Length: 269
Image 1 (cartoon, one colour):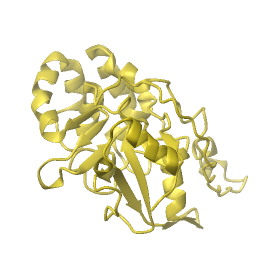
Image 2 (cartoon, rainbow, N blue to C red; image 1 turned 45 degrees about the vertical axis):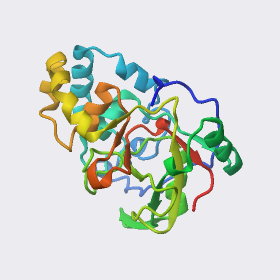
Image 3 (tube, rainbow, N blue to C red; image 1 turned 180 degrees about the vertical axis):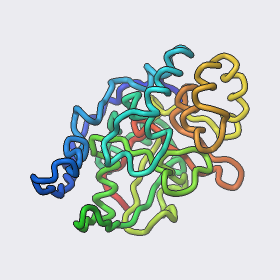
């Protein structure tokens, strides 16, 4: 699918992301205070680079290697650094935080028609509500709050850090026409790949192309290490792809690394 990071013509404003409550430490123990400035995403701690993916595609071997090395020790906000993940760090360092387009249901259907996209190309991701403890405080995100973050939040959270990475790290969708994907049952986000911004490669094809890419980009390959499912998405981004398609019995999977590759339908299932 074509496009080199082109801007979508759709702009939709969404609800503000819920802001996390902070636990204040006693003043007599300042050394135990948490870095509050790193807790809540804003334009300073969650950088957004316009056409970041397009810029990434044009980088030289030296530039890619430097960016990856910088990403290893980059100071990330806590909400993105919940689990060690090379892809999250690399995407954050590259500024891959641009938002996806979100269309009203009627406009979403019209987009499919206008772009000759059959409905069996719709992809979906289901989630459940979560409750967790932090600093003695209990937090809860409903399933709809989570899908709102996927669509509207100011950060690009790369999934796959707590589960499997069969086709690299990223947010996994299933191309099943919009049904429940099996990841949860609370709410199902519906989307389609944007023909203007999605650059898709099958996982098998990615593996086959890596050897050639490492020969032409030896410094980057040396910095990242040998190809594996754990760094597959880092290689994909460097090679000019932001979506990895599953293979074999999971060929309907779409691992979305850069959410700008998506066009969401506003309503969930």
